[in-house]
Length: 242
Image 1 (tube, rainbow, N blue to C red):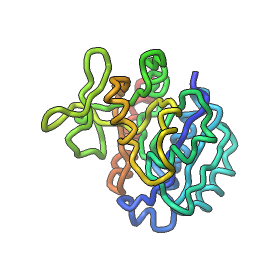
Image 2 (image 1 turned 90 degrees about the horizontal axis):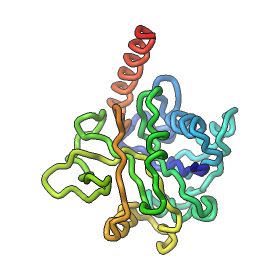
Image 3 (image 1 turned 60 degrees about the horizontal axis):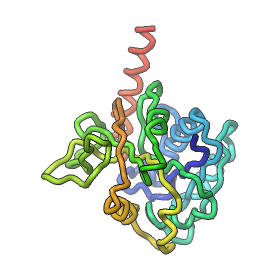
Image 4 (image 1 turned 120 degrees about the horizontal axis):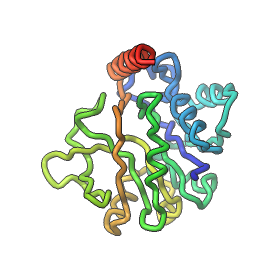
């Protein structure tokens, strides 16, 4: 259903230091595999054919690794070596590579248990007739590596709004379905994708899909170790239960 994705891999990963002293955050390994491969393998498994990957920090090292991949999707580089454009500006710069059809946008630091059909479930809930954006949202209390107050309230019709109180049950889990045309009015400059979300929120065209499982936000070295422990335990339990 969705054949193109953008993987946000350009960041410095300052919170991940010292692991990112000589590599990008995308190349930090979790359970023996770089974060970039966790996401690209997931995308390949659901039939995504093209992945636009933006690069900035340690870009040569990341590109060299990508060229060693044997399986899909096809990788297209969006080069941000000259200036890091953040999550919004990076999408605007990549527009000529993304096409017109809805795409997936994926953060590099979002992983989940390998047997959970997270992307399949997200895509099954996508309705382009009423939605302009569909965000994967995790329960704040069912997440690893997240200590915030939550981002969104999800309503009965799956529409989302910014948290109304001191806290919200759901947090953006790093993957969304997005119509590229939404980014066309914006300039190629550093800005957060929150600016685009705000406009979609005003139109009441942004929705949320709850991740029915355990979300791991791998944003620092402690989260790397914790997520590896979760993945190992999940593998042991799955083998034990057949």
